[in-house]
Figure 1: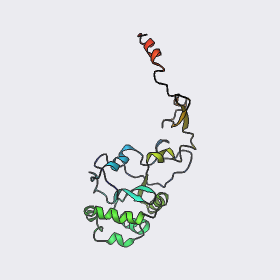
Figure 2: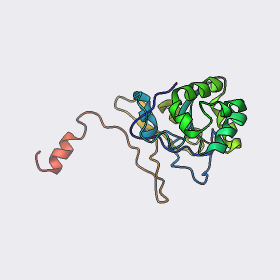
Figure 3: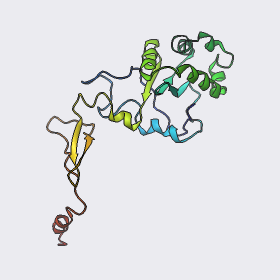
Figure 4: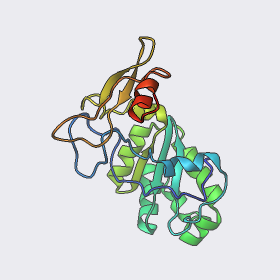
Length: 208
């Protein structure tokens, strides 16, 4: 079971499947160098075990572990709760469980609710689960770690990677900034060596 944050609150999940199609722009998507739920607010919950101040208006809502990662799920109303149980969790009787049959009961029994949901997601891949959520009309989004962002399927087809030279002759792979301009590309020059520009800067300000 995952811990929950007090602040910042997690972003509202976007209803879309995972992974996104490779290459090209898609309406409603963010900058190409960002993957779903990779913002600081979505990762804040990882270091705390307290209950979020936004919890309770909808339930279940938040991050849930599945077989190969974490997904965010947001159930907006009682109809969606019934659809989640039947079409995603494969257990329509769970919706009628007296602990979870109404919003207030799900809120009071949140810990038990999370355990019931995660036990049913343990054998699912993130991609399959998000496809099922999308088909059921329930908000869901993938939670990405830093390594996932580096492997995001939009970056390679859109030519977002550049090799940046390092002192000593080596290089590092770095992503272009999210903003793209028609009149040129953002500068991705070599990383300077320690003290490389000291004399030039001192001369420029009249100290050498």
